[in-house]
Each structure stands twice: as C-alpha cells, then as structure tokens.
Image (cartoon, rainbow, N blue to C red; front, side):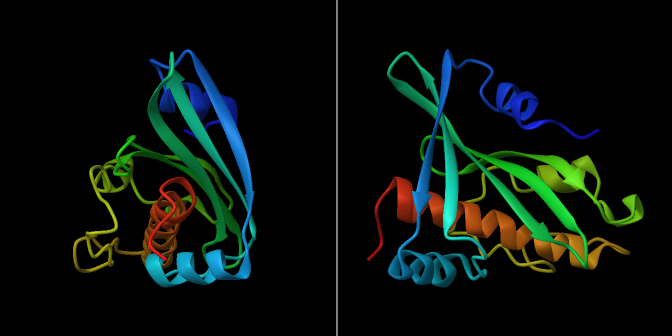
Length: 158
C-alpha cells in the first residue's frame, strides 16, 4: 500500500499534536558535506524536513526522498527519532514495476540505523533478488536522509 504525504506524516508521528516543516536551501558547502557524509548524490538543493512535536518536545523528524530507481521514480519517507536513528520507512510512490518493490519486512531492517552503520547492500543491508537497483536506491536515500539530519538539524560535522 502506498501513502499520501499527509497519511504518512500522521503515521510517522502518531503522538504529535503538531507537525511543522522547514525548507532548507543548501549551500554548495552543505551539499558537498551531505554527499560526503551520506555517500550519496544530492540532486536537489531544496530540502524539506518535517518535525513532529508533542507540546514543545520533538518526537521525531521525517524526510521525503524522491529518486529514480532504474528509469522511473520512487518516493519514500524516512522517519527519524529525535536522536537521528531511523524509526521507519514508508513508500509513498513507486513507478517501476511492482516486482521491483522490496517487501515491507525488507524496509523494516533500517529501523535503528544511523550514519554510524555501514548501510551497504550486501553488508548490513540485505540484498533483494530481482530488486537490486531498488535496494541500492533506497539505501542511498536512507543515507541521504541521515546526512540531512546530521548537517541541517544538528549542524555538524564541518
């Protein structure tokens, strides 16, 4: 099942009383640092990060990553804990044949991952027979989302 942005945000932050978003326009330096830290190309210098709040307490962050798998786009939301670990992934759109879409269980393996993990297909991320490009694209997207958190939300490393 695919989710709209609004549905995915509700599922991402079920305990939040509000969700705010901030748009960042990356400088060349930020783009370079994110690509280096995340080991993934950044195609757009405009990034939106959603923050879920319960009162004044942050309950998490979310980033929607849109990228091509083979030749067609996929969009998914990476939900992060307040400390910057992956809480969940939700596929919002997948335009490649559905045979190339990994299972829900496969996406769940990212739970708890941070940039301290290797996040490499065939290493700490399981490969998917028949969906290698999907697995690689998703893994790059997760690394990119974690790098956005590190550089834009946490403000480091320089």
